[in-house]
Length: 83
Image 1 (cartoon, rainbow, N blue to C red):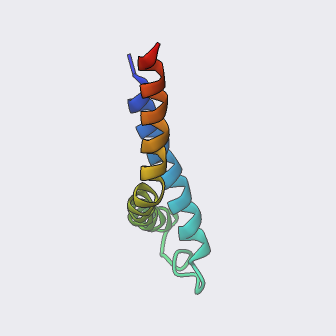
Image 2: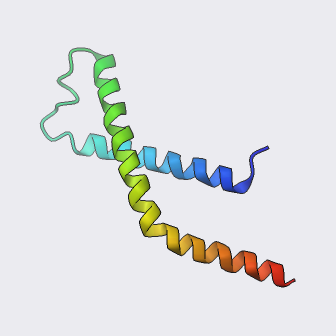
């Protein structure tokens, strides 16, 4: 059974992958991804770029949103402990 923390971690990873995939398409100004010799080569190159960008998004969003989420979760957990 998947607990809430694990589910949120997977959802955060998928969000970063989607952001990375979109950024890989947007950053292809000169058509480098489309110049690949085969369709599979183009797909593999875009997946590689998306994974690198997803890791960058993960690190950035962890530092940007982490403290706010931590504060929200700790307040809600502490609030439930009072009851």
